[in-house]
Amino acid sequence: MKKPDQVKYNEQTGRYDAALTPYATSVGAPKIEMDDIEGWKTQQVVVANSMLEAQFDAIKQQYLALKERVESNERIYRAHFKFTPIVGKTYHLYQSTQGGEFLSLLLPSECTFEHLGSYKLTDHQIWEPV
Image 1 (cartoon, rainbow, N blue to C red):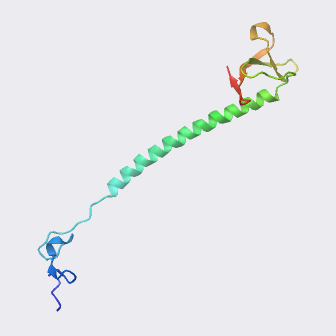
Image 2 (image 1 turned 30 degrees about the horizontal axis):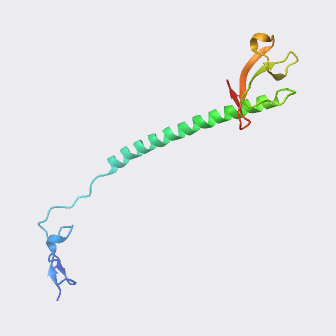
Image 3 (image 1 turned 180 degrees about the horizontal axis):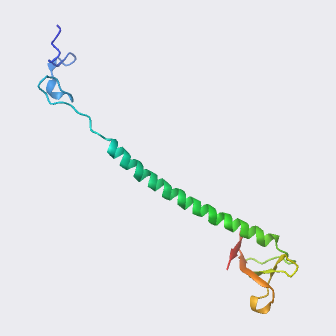
């Protein structure tokens, strides 16, 4: 038997269950309005983007620091030296009068060449600034 639209009858349970529905079932019921979530979405986009930008900036800083280490390491390996460096020992990079760079055990106070930096060789064969 067909029921009017305002009567909510559940044929599976055989009961009237209008009070159990999440929506209005009669003309006199209050109007259902959707929440305006555009403001919330806009705020969440700002929060998420600022967090992602902070992560991006941190990664960018790590990248730049790593790039600088690579360039420094390559610079020292390109420098002139005629000895096998010992891990953990401090070496000094100097500017030669002929224009090249060389690595030496001489301290800056013991040498008249332009001192470019002091470095220590790690066990991973990477030159670390001292």
